[in-house]
Image (tube, rainbow, N blue to C red; front, side, top):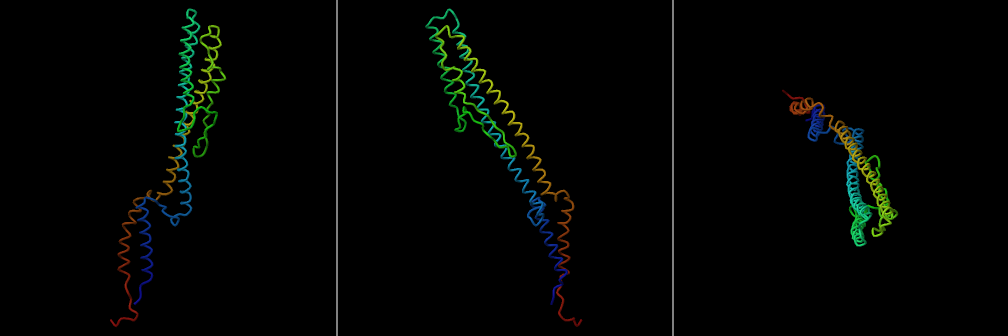
Amino acid sequence: MKVNTPNANMLNNVLQQQQKLSQQLATGKRINSAADDAAGLQIANRLSSNINAQQQGQRNLADGVAFARVYDQALQGVNDNILELERLTIAAGNGIYSEADRKALQTEANGYLANIQQGLTAEFAGKALFTDSSLTFNAGESNLSLQTQDLGTVLANQNIFNIDLTDANAVADNLTAVRAAAEQVNAFQAQTGASINTFQSASRAVAGQEVATAEARSVLLIRILLKPAVNVQLITFCPKVLLTLLCRLVFLPNKPSLY
């Protein structure tokens, strides 16, 4: 007995084609291994790498925005206390205040100065906010930086911690120091606000790139679904072919039949 070899080969080919199409429809992907499309798989892997980088870049930028917002709020807290110091400094210029009154103003001012000192120790996730540093956040394809300042040193240079409201003759100097400190803090806040806007804009751009890259990868991997009718027809047609080939796979005798 011998097997009709051409029919057996045809059966194997149909079985392989059916298995491949079934796998593609089950996974929804045209490329499931390098055997399907080696070059296409390499491109898809590079796109996947880009998507991973873009997703992590968005998380990095989100951390940057969170840090910048906390930094901005800490600056605002310092600024609020400086505004109160300005009010007290102006009040110290009231000619009817007695020495006791001025001492009371100084006591209140010392409380606001203590608040500022405490605010300068603020941290974000264990990282000090008020240091001279440039924090870099990778966005996937580029880096963005956030500049922070050693505000304690800046305020000390403005002599704000040495204001004396008990001295009626020092009102002008005290007011100059307080207002200069306020202007400096306002400048830092403006810079921080601009950085927050930049980070948020970059994050939106990276999110858009991720969507576009994911769509490109989907088109590459799932191109089989672009012609669903053809694929379904092939899958439903394969069993019919299999049945026909099985019927034709007959065992032929080695010797001619007597009949």
